[in-house]
Length: 391
Image 1 (tube, rainbow, N blue to C red):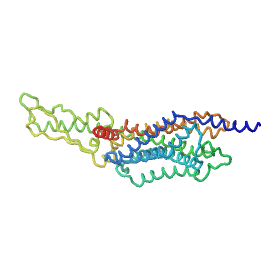
Image 2 (image 1 turned 90 degrees about the vertical axis):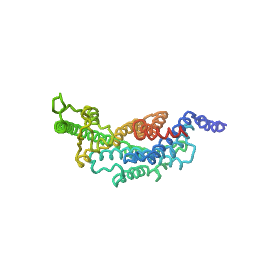
Image 3 (image 1 turned 120 degrees about the horizontal axis):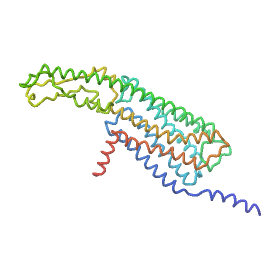
C-alpha cells in the first residue's frame, strides 16, 4: 500500500516543475527576430555598399556572422528550454550539440572583437603597412584564427567531456566543472585584458598622432599666411587713394575649420589632396590676374600621417561595442565560473538564467550600435528604409 502512494508522489514534482514560461517564449522569439534581422542587415550592407567594404567592416561581418549563427543554432533551443521552465526534455545528444555551438559561438564573438583590436592597433602603429581596402594575409590569418581557436575551445564537448555517469537528463549544462573554468579563462578572462590593453595603445597612438597633426597644421597655416602676403605684395597694383602693401587675407576656410575643431572629422579630401583656395579680394581687384595659393604635403609625409576618416569613425564605434560586450558577458562568466569553482555556493537558478539572457542580448545590440554611431552604416540603413517606404 505505501508503494502505491510512493509512485504518484515521485511523478508529481516533475509535473509541478514543468510549468510553461510564456514571458520567456515571447521575449526569446523577439530576441531571435532582432538578432537575425540586425545582423543580416549588417552583412548585406557591407556586401552591397562599396563605401563599407573596408578591412574593419570585414571583421565586423565576421562578428555579425557569429551572432547570426547564435540566433539560428543556439537561441531556439535555449528559448525552448526556458519555456519548459528550465527543464530539458529533448535528446541529450542534441544537448551536447547545443553546448558545443554555445561555447564556440560565444568564444568566436569575443575572439572577433579581440582580432578587431589587434587590427586597429596595427593600423595606428604602422599605417604604412596597413591595407584599408583589401584583406591581406595578416588579416586573413586573424580572421581564420578567431574561428579555429573558438572551435578548439569548444572541441572537448564534441569529444564527450559531457558524458559523465549519473547525468541528469532533465538538465542541459556543461557537466565538467574543470572544463567550465578552462573555457571561461580561454574565452573571456585572457582575451579581454589583451583587448583593453590594445585599445589603450590605439588611443595613445591616436593622441600622439593628433598632437603631431596640430603642430604640422600650425606650421602650414604660418606658411600659408606668408604666401598670401607675398602674393598680394608682388602681384597686385596699388589703387589710387590706398596704401600699397599686403592686405589682411583670411585663411582658406577648410583650414580655419580644421584648426577650430582640432580633430580629424573632415572628409578624406582634407587629408589626401592638395588644398586649393582662391584668395578673396575686394571687388575692384577681381578683373586682375589673381594667383592661386597652393600648399601641399610631400606624398610620403601624407601617407605616413594618414589615418582615414572612415577608419577614425570605426575606431569611435568599436570601443562602444567592446564596452557593451563586457557589460553583457562579464556577469555570465563570473557567475558560471563561481558556480563551477565553489560547489558549496548556492547560486539561484533565476540569477543563472538572467545572466545568460543578458549575454545573448549582446548579439542584438551590436547592429543597433553600428546604426547609431557609424555614419556609413547609418547612411546605408536610411537609404534602404527610404526605398522600402517608397515601395
